[in-house]
Image (cartoon, rainbow, N blue to C red):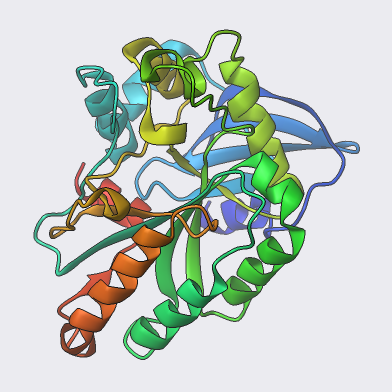
Length: 307
């Protein structure tokens, strides 16, 4: 059975001609299938391993009923994580997974690529590899990405993918919406994805398609633009099968990382203060890094372990 499933898994590639992209509820082995589409005459599926929270693309799946899905997921790490998020109180800011394993000797580094006309801060990644590379390779990082950033920064995206191909980084790619709408004149309660007229399904599904077309494997996580949401929008993301990703350590806002923190910085050129603070932290902890007492951790593995 395992050998058959491995044969059905596709290597990561780009899907330039995907059509009929839609939400789907199905199963393939230990994977919950959440999306389906066509690539020419081939039907393809995107799903999540309900034990490890790792995602993959497959060529076969069967549809399942809501009842079968509920029973199957009830005692799995994915099902427990989803249920925990549905029970959140609906805070306007930072809703979602903010911290994972508090016993860890380190944290999870998340980097947002919101739309920007400025180039990628490549020096950050070079500093990261120089500092953590000798102890952790590939270095686990989480990059949340928008469709507009991908459209405007093809060279920077290719450079990031090359770091992953070389085995320097292990990147968890996170959907950060396609347009990342923002109006500085609007209050937070009516801004970002809460702005009137926003098509939430389009923001999510269009960006997933853009990621696939660029050869990126979407993870099971979603980060709200500005980390702003309300209960209705938050639950709609959960209904799409995604786990919202917050942060308890947005460095540019003066929030300090703790053990297991989800740290947030912006290497899109728009928030140099956060980059400066992160590099300072790395230098302060250089001895701890060498002794593996201040490390970076992979997000899917840690979230699954906590559930």
